[in-house]
Length: 633
Image (cartoon, rainbow, N blue to C red):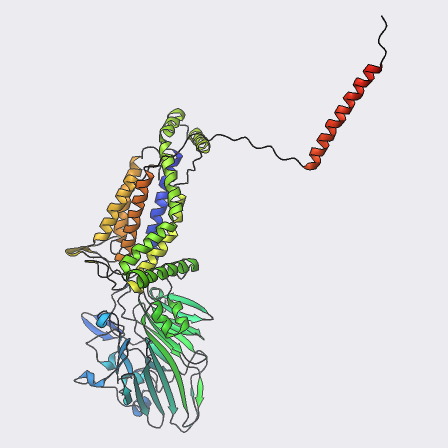
């Protein structure tokens, strides 16, 4: 920090404010950027060892190592052998928003394609894939996990029978353990939503009453999603989180926090009575909603391989009795309209800030304005960002203008500050005292230039998080080479890569917007009035490198965010250009006489009475003098 006796208090205050702003930006990048994700294996629970991929069995799996293995093998069909043509095991469902491919092996979801964009050019597939593994070795979503030794996880690796495919929107799978149980899984796509209705029916084929589940911690069975979601957005503004809703409130658990316990077991968590549970990233959400009471939520695994399940409550079935449980499964964008179409409370999964309610509300307000501009005025999100920038600048104009006027006044006081510095010499205490007296005399606040700028930081942070995490900007074109406002603008790719500080991505392309932004910041500094004497070398160096540091931090961020910063800086330059032509008065402020304090009517009456009494006494005295005899000669 500054520790130079030649510098005045004003310079120190200015430098402290600049350093605080820098620390805020760096701190934000450090604490709120998504943590580096290990390389995501787009497959099931598998690890790579010396170039080969081997399956990893979760703790809850009971394949090949259960006490009831022999009974299971006798009851169930054998583990599914791979077919020469795997597509023979596939069943495809489709509506206007989803295309789901199921495999008969486990009756599970093999591919979940969210249909997006014109002619579905922007579609994305959410289920991780590993082509080298067959279906009986994969962990796929919408599998079943029973809390009993006989079935356990085994149904997911047997080939089910397809009962009915009435149309492209519904399919029913069935598997039977003769003399023990029959399980039917029915999936139906809903029209106009990214939702699949899943019904699981269990029939007791035994001769005795059977109990499924033990207590609230051991559900009858669970429908789960795993392993992870191949959304391709784990390095965007909002990190991946597991979200559940309970009691009209959401709880967020970052998947980066699924650390391995000291015991070596996988991370485990269980929640009772959730309304729904979801895996949410920057642009996409996968959610499971039980359509029954007393549900049980659990998730376990690591940061990159985990399962999220919703369990059905404990139940008892008489011989021949059937119990059925229904779920809603959402697979789609983290966009407001899509979430709202699924079920009402799912929209709350969209959160730009999970720790500060006001900032989250403010970010969503800015998103609402952005969408309104796009839908009603310009039909281009790049232009909508420019309009939003103008609105934000207009609202913040009083603070910005006050800051600039204060800095202008301080710049005009620079010669007198130099004079005081020369008069006081090394006596810093006397210098501070006389400077404060001068500020009071001239009506200038030393914090007038810094405080308004700091008050604008929450607005920038809210816009930063919103523009980098809004699904609406994904694949949204602007002009020319900027065809995706959620990605860096990438004017051209470079033949080399260089690691960048504060960024998970290296320098591998020429991104023009951050460079233009840095140049505009330099121009803004040149036009900005100096708020004190000539800057010392430390200040000059800091002000010189600030645009470079900021450009490095934002270099690989979304072009929509860099577009906002660039336009905002250009508007600031226009304001600086205007302020340069305004003359401000820093003459000593004349002290005005304080007006006489109004007296109470009783005091006024008493004063008049005293005056009257005084006049009466004077008259009496004059009268006595006239009546006295004149003195003798």
